[in-house]
Image (cartoon, rainbow, N blue to C red; front, side, top):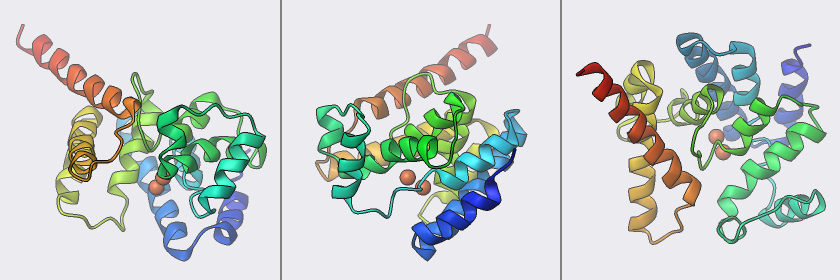
Length: 197
Ligand code: FE
Ligand code: FE
């Protein structure tokens, strides 16, 4: 049963106006990408909708929510509060929204860092978050073009920007983010090697 209408009402109350609009836009972008790449558009829409469901909670509350729910945090995760909402989101999606599909839960869990061997749905959500309609950073049009051509190319484009930015401001780069970057670069190389044979 599709519970998107119910989730939308919960999120309207939980999120700031700006984040609520972002969530609706990510849901739309995720559905579009799902249709291009052949993954379930309904699942993609739902995950896009709920992916930031905990982001407007204070960091301290997010941390205690994770501790209550026995989420294991690496030292990189404990020290980067911006990452909390993805891990909290997974728990919230399971407990409050009743989402039990493992792939959907992982897509929420890894939407910020990415990781090695992301599933198609995980990639779709990861990229939808970069190209949602309200995004207007320099280079968003290039990202939108790449997203239509190849998810791996879009991941490399998005992550090279993100990683450079983190390094320039001397912030922690989560190992999963480096894994996601390397994985996408490697996938593109393998594809090119296959094409030139
Ligand atoms: Fe997020
Ligand atoms: Fe987001």
